[in-house]
Image 1 (cartoon, rainbow, N blue to C red):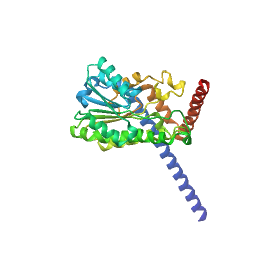
Image 2 (image 1 turned 30 degrees about the vertical axis):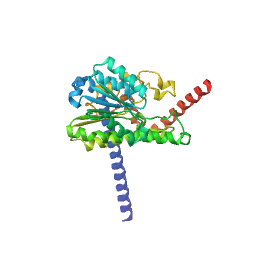
Image 3 (image 1 turned 45 degrees about the horizontal axis):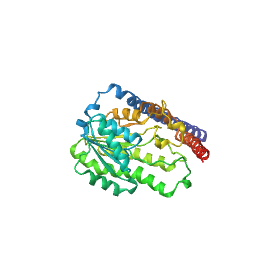
Image 4 (image 1 turned 135 degrees about the horizontal axis):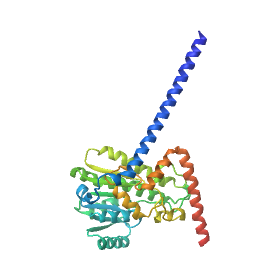
Length: 327
Protein backbone atom coordinates (compact mmCIF):
# COMPACT_ATOMS: atom_id res chain seq x y z
CA UNK A 1 0.00 0.00 0.00
CA UNK A 2 2.82 2.38 0.89
CA UNK A 3 4.57 1.56 -2.38
CA UNK A 4 1.39 2.38 -4.29
CA UNK A 5 1.06 5.71 -2.54
CA UNK A 6 4.66 6.59 -3.35
CA UNK A 7 4.05 5.67 -6.98
CA UNK A 8 0.93 7.87 -7.04
CA UNK A 9 2.81 10.80 -5.46
CA UNK A 10 5.61 10.42 -8.00
CA UNK A 11 3.07 10.35 -10.81
CA UNK A 12 1.35 13.49 -9.50
CA UNK A 13 4.71 15.27 -9.09
CA UNK A 14 5.73 14.26 -12.63
CA UNK A 15 2.42 15.47 -14.08
CA UNK A 16 2.69 18.72 -12.14
CA UNK A 17 6.22 19.37 -13.42
CA UNK A 18 5.17 18.51 -16.98
CA UNK A 19 2.18 20.85 -16.72
CA UNK A 20 4.29 23.70 -15.33
CA UNK A 21 6.90 23.11 -18.04
CA UNK A 22 4.26 23.04 -20.78
CA UNK A 23 2.63 26.24 -19.48
CA UNK A 24 6.03 27.95 -19.29
CA UNK A 25 6.90 26.96 -22.85
CA UNK A 26 3.44 28.03 -24.02
CA UNK A 27 3.81 31.41 -22.29
CA UNK A 28 7.25 31.98 -23.81
CA UNK A 29 5.92 30.98 -27.24
CA UNK A 30 2.97 33.35 -26.99
CA UNK A 31 5.30 36.17 -25.88
CA UNK A 32 7.65 35.42 -28.79
CA UNK A 33 4.81 35.40 -31.32
CA UNK A 34 3.37 38.62 -29.88
CA UNK A 35 6.74 40.38 -30.10
CA UNK A 36 7.21 39.08 -33.63
CA UNK A 37 3.79 40.43 -34.64
CA UNK A 38 4.55 43.77 -33.04
CA UNK A 39 7.86 44.21 -34.83
CA UNK A 40 6.30 43.05 -38.12
CA UNK A 41 3.52 45.60 -37.73
CA UNK A 42 6.00 48.37 -36.96
CA UNK A 43 8.14 47.47 -39.96
CA UNK A 44 5.35 46.99 -42.46
CA UNK A 45 2.62 49.43 -41.44
CA UNK A 46 4.27 52.54 -42.93
CA UNK A 47 4.52 50.68 -46.24
CA UNK A 48 1.16 48.93 -46.54
CA UNK A 49 -1.39 50.72 -44.37
CA UNK A 50 -3.20 53.70 -45.93
CA UNK A 51 -1.06 56.80 -46.02
CA UNK A 52 -2.64 59.27 -43.61
CA UNK A 53 0.30 61.63 -43.18
CA UNK A 54 -1.29 64.48 -45.14
CA UNK A 55 -4.50 64.26 -43.07
CA UNK A 56 -2.96 64.43 -39.61
CA UNK A 57 -4.49 67.87 -39.10
CA UNK A 58 -7.96 66.60 -40.04
CA UNK A 59 -7.61 63.51 -37.92
CA UNK A 60 -6.21 65.08 -34.75
CA UNK A 61 -6.34 68.88 -34.99
CA UNK A 62 -4.38 71.70 -36.58
CA UNK A 63 -1.96 72.39 -33.72
CA UNK A 64 0.78 70.15 -32.30
CA UNK A 65 2.75 70.85 -29.14
CA UNK A 66 6.25 69.40 -28.82
CA UNK A 67 8.30 69.58 -25.61
CA UNK A 68 12.08 69.57 -25.77
CA UNK A 69 11.68 70.88 -29.31
CA UNK A 70 14.93 72.76 -29.93
CA UNK A 71 17.34 69.83 -30.27
CA UNK A 72 17.53 66.22 -31.38
CA UNK A 73 14.41 64.15 -31.80
CA UNK A 74 12.09 66.88 -30.50
CA UNK A 75 13.18 69.44 -33.07
CA UNK A 76 13.18 66.93 -35.92
CA UNK A 77 9.73 65.64 -34.91
CA UNK A 78 8.37 69.20 -34.82
CA UNK A 79 9.78 69.88 -38.29
CA UNK A 80 8.30 66.65 -39.64
CA UNK A 81 4.86 67.55 -38.30
CA UNK A 82 5.21 71.03 -39.78
CA UNK A 83 6.02 69.46 -43.14
CA UNK A 84 2.63 67.71 -42.91
CA UNK A 85 0.86 71.04 -42.50
CA UNK A 86 0.44 71.23 -38.72
CA UNK A 87 0.96 74.43 -36.77
CA UNK A 88 3.58 73.94 -34.05
CA UNK A 89 3.87 75.04 -30.44
CA UNK A 90 7.54 74.78 -29.49
CA UNK A 91 8.25 74.29 -25.79
CA UNK A 92 11.77 74.32 -24.40
CA UNK A 93 13.97 75.87 -21.74
CA UNK A 94 16.15 78.15 -23.92
CA UNK A 95 14.42 81.20 -25.42
CA UNK A 96 17.33 81.72 -27.81
CA UNK A 97 17.03 78.19 -29.22
CA UNK A 98 13.23 78.51 -29.37
CA UNK A 99 13.47 81.67 -31.46
CA UNK A 100 16.00 80.08 -33.79
CA UNK A 101 13.88 76.95 -34.28
CA UNK A 102 10.77 79.04 -34.83
CA UNK A 103 12.47 80.99 -37.61
CA UNK A 104 13.71 77.79 -39.23
CA UNK A 105 10.25 76.22 -39.27
CA UNK A 106 8.42 79.33 -40.45
CA UNK A 107 10.93 79.96 -43.24
CA UNK A 108 10.73 76.36 -44.45
CA UNK A 109 7.05 75.43 -43.97
CA UNK A 110 3.89 77.48 -44.43
CA UNK A 111 2.60 76.97 -40.90
CA UNK A 112 2.03 79.02 -37.78
CA UNK A 113 4.26 78.61 -34.74
CA UNK A 114 4.22 79.69 -31.11
CA UNK A 115 7.09 79.46 -28.67
CA UNK A 116 6.79 78.84 -24.93
CA UNK A 117 9.77 78.95 -22.60
CA UNK A 118 9.44 76.40 -19.81
CA UNK A 119 11.80 74.55 -17.48
CA UNK A 120 10.16 71.24 -16.54
CA UNK A 121 12.53 70.72 -13.63
CA UNK A 122 10.18 73.21 -11.89
CA UNK A 123 7.40 70.61 -12.05
CA UNK A 124 3.77 71.80 -11.86
CA UNK A 125 4.86 75.42 -12.14
CA UNK A 126 6.22 74.77 -15.64
CA UNK A 127 3.07 72.94 -16.79
CA UNK A 128 0.84 75.73 -15.44
CA UNK A 129 2.99 78.25 -17.32
CA UNK A 130 2.61 76.29 -20.58
CA UNK A 131 -1.18 76.22 -20.19
CA UNK A 132 -1.32 79.93 -19.39
CA UNK A 133 0.87 80.98 -22.31
CA UNK A 134 -0.97 78.65 -24.67
CA UNK A 135 -4.24 80.47 -24.19
CA UNK A 136 -7.10 79.10 -26.28
CA UNK A 137 -5.00 77.21 -28.82
CA UNK A 138 -6.48 73.69 -29.11
CA UNK A 139 -3.76 71.03 -29.09
CA UNK A 140 -4.48 68.13 -31.43
CA UNK A 141 -1.14 66.34 -31.04
CA UNK A 142 0.87 66.41 -27.82
CA UNK A 143 4.45 65.12 -28.11
CA UNK A 144 6.09 64.57 -24.72
CA UNK A 145 9.71 64.43 -25.78
CA UNK A 146 11.51 66.44 -23.12
CA UNK A 147 13.88 64.34 -21.07
CA UNK A 148 17.06 64.41 -19.04
CA UNK A 149 19.92 61.92 -19.18
CA UNK A 150 23.05 61.36 -17.08
CA UNK A 151 26.07 63.37 -18.19
CA UNK A 152 27.75 59.98 -18.69
CA UNK A 153 27.27 56.50 -17.17
CA UNK A 154 27.75 56.85 -13.41
CA UNK A 155 27.29 54.93 -10.20
CA UNK A 156 24.35 56.23 -8.17
CA UNK A 157 26.48 57.90 -5.47
CA UNK A 158 28.40 59.82 -8.16
CA UNK A 159 25.29 61.51 -9.59
CA UNK A 160 24.59 64.88 -7.94
CA UNK A 161 21.41 64.79 -5.89
CA UNK A 162 19.98 67.79 -7.73
CA UNK A 163 20.52 66.03 -11.06
CA UNK A 164 18.68 62.94 -9.82
CA UNK A 165 15.71 65.06 -8.78
CA UNK A 166 15.73 66.82 -12.16
CA UNK A 167 15.67 63.48 -13.97
CA UNK A 168 12.67 62.36 -11.92
CA UNK A 169 10.81 65.66 -12.27
CA UNK A 170 11.45 65.98 -16.01
CA UNK A 171 11.20 62.36 -17.17
CA UNK A 172 8.37 61.33 -14.86
CA UNK A 173 6.66 64.51 -13.73
CA UNK A 174 6.47 66.37 -17.04
CA UNK A 175 4.95 63.53 -19.07
CA UNK A 176 2.39 62.85 -16.34
CA UNK A 177 1.23 66.42 -15.80
CA UNK A 178 1.30 67.35 -19.51
CA UNK A 179 -0.93 64.37 -20.35
CA UNK A 180 -3.30 65.35 -17.55
CA UNK A 181 -3.36 68.95 -18.75
CA UNK A 182 -4.60 68.14 -22.26
CA UNK A 183 -6.33 64.78 -22.24
CA UNK A 184 -9.74 66.01 -21.09
CA UNK A 185 -9.88 68.53 -23.95
CA UNK A 186 -9.09 65.73 -26.40
CA UNK A 187 -11.73 63.54 -24.79
CA UNK A 188 -14.32 66.30 -25.17
CA UNK A 189 -13.46 66.74 -28.86
CA UNK A 190 -13.20 62.94 -29.25
CA UNK A 191 -10.00 63.31 -31.21
CA UNK A 192 -6.36 63.95 -30.52
CA UNK A 193 -3.03 62.18 -30.18
CA UNK A 194 -0.50 61.87 -27.38
CA UNK A 195 3.01 60.65 -28.20
CA UNK A 196 5.13 59.80 -25.17
CA UNK A 197 8.77 59.27 -26.12
CA UNK A 198 10.62 56.92 -23.82
CA UNK A 199 13.88 55.04 -24.48
CA UNK A 200 15.18 51.55 -25.21
CA UNK A 201 16.71 51.71 -21.74
CA UNK A 202 13.24 50.79 -20.46
CA UNK A 203 13.71 47.19 -21.63
CA UNK A 204 15.65 46.14 -18.55
CA UNK A 205 17.21 47.49 -15.34
CA UNK A 206 20.25 49.42 -16.52
CA UNK A 207 23.33 49.66 -14.26
CA UNK A 208 25.22 52.98 -14.34
CA UNK A 209 22.03 54.67 -15.58
CA UNK A 210 19.70 53.29 -12.94
CA UNK A 211 17.45 56.30 -12.36
CA UNK A 212 17.27 57.31 -16.02
CA UNK A 213 16.26 53.81 -17.15
CA UNK A 214 13.75 53.46 -14.31
CA UNK A 215 12.13 56.76 -15.30
CA UNK A 216 11.72 55.48 -18.86
CA UNK A 217 10.08 52.28 -17.61
CA UNK A 218 7.57 54.55 -15.87
CA UNK A 219 6.76 56.25 -19.18
CA UNK A 220 6.11 52.89 -20.85
CA UNK A 221 3.79 51.61 -18.12
CA UNK A 222 2.08 54.98 -17.70
CA UNK A 223 1.36 55.30 -21.42
CA UNK A 224 0.00 51.79 -21.82
CA UNK A 225 -2.30 52.17 -18.81
CA UNK A 226 -3.44 55.60 -20.00
CA UNK A 227 -4.33 54.10 -23.39
CA UNK A 228 -6.52 51.54 -21.62
CA UNK A 229 -8.27 54.21 -19.55
CA UNK A 230 -9.16 56.32 -22.61
CA UNK A 231 -9.53 53.53 -25.18
CA UNK A 232 -13.12 54.48 -26.04
CA UNK A 233 -12.62 58.24 -26.32
CA UNK A 234 -11.16 58.61 -29.82
CA UNK A 235 -7.65 59.48 -28.62
CA UNK A 236 -4.48 57.94 -30.07
CA UNK A 237 -1.98 57.34 -27.27
CA UNK A 238 1.37 56.16 -28.59
CA UNK A 239 4.49 54.97 -26.80
CA UNK A 240 7.85 55.25 -28.59
CA UNK A 241 11.06 53.73 -27.21
CA UNK A 242 13.98 54.59 -29.50
CA UNK A 243 17.33 52.88 -29.22
CA UNK A 244 20.44 55.01 -29.84
CA UNK A 245 19.89 58.11 -31.99
CA UNK A 246 22.78 60.38 -32.97
CA UNK A 247 21.91 63.28 -30.68
CA UNK A 248 23.85 65.29 -28.13
CA UNK A 249 22.20 63.20 -25.38
CA UNK A 250 24.61 60.42 -26.37
CA UNK A 251 27.69 62.63 -26.60
CA UNK A 252 29.59 60.59 -24.01
CA UNK A 253 30.63 57.96 -26.58
CA UNK A 254 31.57 58.23 -30.26
CA UNK A 255 30.26 54.67 -30.70
CA UNK A 256 26.67 55.89 -30.39
CA UNK A 257 27.08 59.54 -31.38
CA UNK A 258 27.93 58.84 -35.02
CA UNK A 259 25.18 58.03 -37.53
CA UNK A 260 25.06 54.42 -38.75
CA UNK A 261 22.55 51.78 -39.88
CA UNK A 262 21.30 51.24 -36.32
CA UNK A 263 22.01 54.77 -35.07
CA UNK A 264 19.91 57.13 -37.23
CA UNK A 265 20.10 60.88 -37.12
CA UNK A 266 17.07 62.66 -35.59
CA UNK A 267 15.62 63.58 -39.00
CA UNK A 268 15.60 59.97 -40.26
CA UNK A 269 14.19 58.75 -36.97
CA UNK A 270 11.41 61.34 -36.81
CA UNK A 271 10.34 60.87 -40.41
CA UNK A 272 9.72 57.19 -39.76
CA UNK A 273 8.18 57.77 -36.33
CA UNK A 274 5.63 60.29 -37.63
CA UNK A 275 4.65 57.87 -40.41
CA UNK A 276 3.56 55.40 -37.70
CA UNK A 277 1.37 57.84 -35.76
CA UNK A 278 -2.11 56.36 -35.58
CA UNK A 279 -0.94 53.05 -37.01
CA UNK A 280 1.16 51.48 -34.24
CA UNK A 281 0.58 52.04 -30.52
CA UNK A 282 3.90 50.71 -29.18
CA UNK A 283 7.13 50.89 -31.14
CA UNK A 284 10.73 51.98 -31.04
CA UNK A 285 9.77 54.47 -33.76
CA UNK A 286 12.35 53.32 -36.30
CA UNK A 287 12.59 50.15 -38.39
CA UNK A 288 16.16 49.22 -37.41
CA UNK A 289 15.38 49.86 -33.75
CA UNK A 290 12.35 47.58 -33.96
CA UNK A 291 14.64 44.78 -35.13
CA UNK A 292 17.04 45.52 -32.27
CA UNK A 293 14.20 45.56 -29.75
CA UNK A 294 12.86 42.22 -30.96
CA UNK A 295 16.17 40.39 -30.66
CA UNK A 296 16.99 42.15 -27.38
CA UNK A 297 13.77 41.04 -25.71
CA UNK A 298 14.31 37.40 -26.68
CA UNK A 299 17.00 37.28 -24.00
CA UNK A 300 16.07 36.90 -20.32
CA UNK A 301 15.94 40.19 -18.44
CA UNK A 302 18.94 39.37 -16.22
CA UNK A 303 21.12 38.77 -19.29
CA UNK A 304 19.94 42.05 -20.83
CA UNK A 305 20.80 43.83 -17.59
CA UNK A 306 24.34 42.43 -17.52
CA UNK A 307 24.90 43.27 -21.20
CA UNK A 308 23.59 46.80 -20.61
CA UNK A 309 25.81 47.22 -17.58
CA UNK A 310 28.85 46.00 -19.52
CA UNK A 311 28.13 48.39 -22.41
CA UNK A 312 27.73 51.31 -20.01
CA UNK A 313 31.08 50.50 -18.43
CA UNK A 314 32.65 50.76 -21.90
CA UNK A 315 30.85 54.04 -22.58
CA UNK A 316 32.00 55.31 -19.19
CA UNK A 317 35.61 54.41 -20.01
CA UNK A 318 35.29 56.20 -23.39
CA UNK A 319 34.07 59.36 -21.71
CA UNK A 320 36.62 59.40 -18.90
CA UNK A 321 39.41 58.69 -21.37
CA UNK A 322 38.33 61.59 -23.62
CA UNK A 323 38.16 63.92 -20.60
CA UNK A 324 41.61 62.84 -19.49
CA UNK A 325 43.10 63.36 -22.95
CA UNK A 326 41.55 66.80 -23.35
CA UNK A 327 42.75 68.06 -19.95
